[in-house]
Length: 309
Ligand code: CP
Image 1 (cartoon, rainbow, N blue to C red):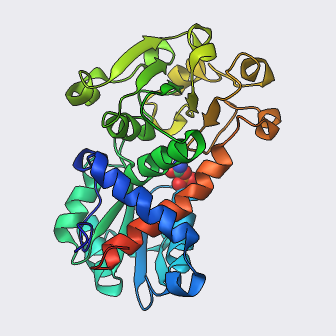
Image 2 (image 1 turned 90 degrees about the vertical axis):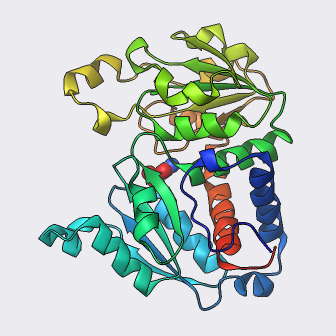
């Protein structure tokens, strides 16, 4: 019996190392599987997606993942074209989607929205990004990328750079990394430092150092995880303008990095990594986005199938 079968995926806080490793192993198998065998994993099943915030990668990779395992998908990518516009509640929208589909992927701006949806839904709910703290499928994809690109996670020095206050991928990644033996360096403008109360439970488990100066750590990092300044979450445009463009990874910065280090970014990027970096061997953020299709296919296959992959 597979532990993920018919279960919600709401938070990385519900994962331990063995659960991550199980998803990684399922992802490896999915990537190598014969396409006909792979299509049996989701045959006759439907993914329902509800996106109350914009998305490119998460929604499309969920859809691509469902197609990869032989299923179909339907959903709402723009709530202004749904009955939410007429005032229908989140609860009723989720209830409807769980009638029409076998698994529901939800993105919503409110913290706690996915857990709330899971209480309403008749079908498993996968959190596709909620509020400012949770993006569990992104964290799984990030860890998988690190493991594939560096052949390990334990023992690495990982720098997380940019908007550490509002970036939800940062919190999910830190909780996920707290299951491993890693050194973490947090680099951000003073006003966008990590919210200490949000990582209270893991502060003692992680070896953390903070700085506002990227140069302090850049030459020692194995993984440089860059994040976008989350303009849409600032209460005040003026505050955004003060920190906009704080860190820019260009070829000058890449030249200071270890030859073996990798650059990741959950994307979208705005101007924090210049396009000329894309062709360097350290740039692995598009590979990271591609791994997201396979990790999500593994999660969908595990949730939809009683047996182990
Ligand atoms: N990384 C990520 O969540 O990207 P999207 O917002 O495009 O889905």
